[in-house]
Image 1: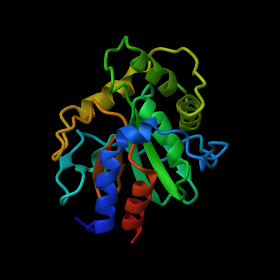
Image 2: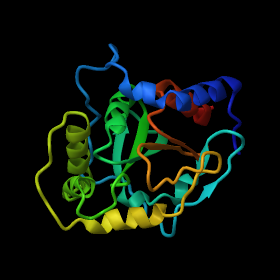
Image 3: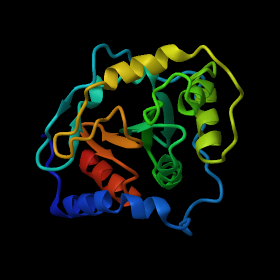
Length: 223
């Protein structure tokens, strides 16, 4: 492991994992911004091709590991704030209520690139509402409109237009995630939303963890 987590980060991490349900059911924090707006999107974003399956590994004593560079980044919706120098990835089912609140809290982050994998992990049946909503977002023609459509839905509740025929990316992402299991918790990462993965640290956390913990891990990556 390139950098070891501090005791403070460990404590905050355990507290975050223990309080996911409380976080998700809490009232709206008073420090949420009145508008949820990222910096301008590019029509296309850097989305390198990744072949093969997601790789998991045990990274120290904290977190369930994902190899960040083994994620299918070519299928991600890429959002950049500020310099975008720090990188995290999210696995999100578009109908997950925890993910909706989590996305609002992540609006506090700056100078970050977020690779978001919109996947119907909570109901992988092609006829499910989860699958159809994923298609409606991923069928947008470029990264910019996919990102804007996703945020309009996940944060604002604005439904995307009805579409079909965008199954390739969904199937590829589900195939990549199949069999990826957390070492400590046994979590199956193709069946949980949201999941946060941190670049360089290669740590994966399931559930809507506290944004303060996200910020702390990003600081560790920068140090």
